[in-house]
Image (cartoon, rainbow, N blue to C red):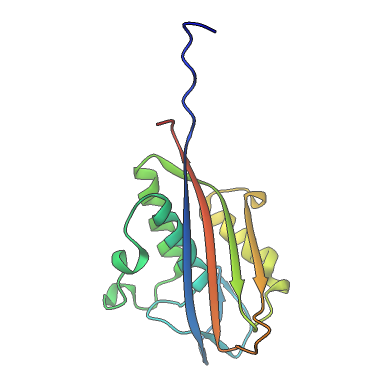
Length: 166
């Protein structure tokens, strides 16, 4: 194979995101962009969707960009009540400017309540749609603390971005 240059490997980048919100009675329970029937929902300046906030932060981290709180600060009235999907779309758009696009994502949601299993297929489909990926490239798992901490939702997301060879 002398004289033939080796193909450059693809530009692969991994990002980790995390978010946590307390549950507040009377707020809608929106997780992964899906409204789940529950008497309490995540509190926050925006919609409190810890799943989408963690996902957006993972995308931004993989792209080497500022974090969610820096780009969309909770003291800015523009983001009051904003849907988490807005943050994910903005993170994907900013990554694309750098020649990067989502290749896969894995999300873990930690909550004693509500139970996510009945909503998991819809949540997973919503994540895949937001990332522009087939559903088999996106996963979402629900875990409980088994400590009776039903007052919060916590989410971790790992995202793989890919781009043109370096």
